[in-house]
Length: 166
Image (cartoon, rainbow, N blue to C red):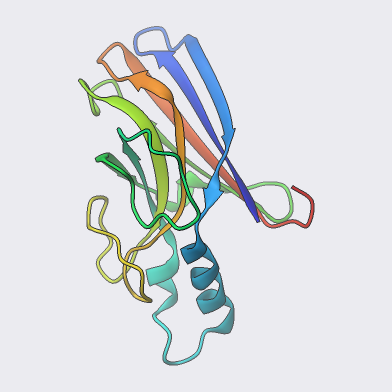
């Protein structure tokens, strides 16, 4: 399993692309737990909806991502991912997309992003945990500094692939 995070920074008025990044991300150890729960579906496991990827959250920490991470280093903003934000394309791949609009997270320097499951109480800012049924972070990555202002919008895309070839 591997992942890739893409950022496209655009002018808020003209939507012209200013910068673009694409970075391989860290899939956390908790992602394996979530997959096992989804595949096994024992009656004692949490309901499927608790394990769905529910939000993408962004933060300001530049601490390197590690597979043992359970949360962002410094949460700034989160966006719920609806069904339309989950795109299946190539076999074994899913892409999650969201946009920070011109009014979102202004005055911060964004440096990290993470994907989070719904947990028992889906939200975009609830503290994640590490056990079944809780909101859990399944992937995290740091990226180059993006000072967020009203003059830009940021498109995030996150592809997760299940393949033997990275």
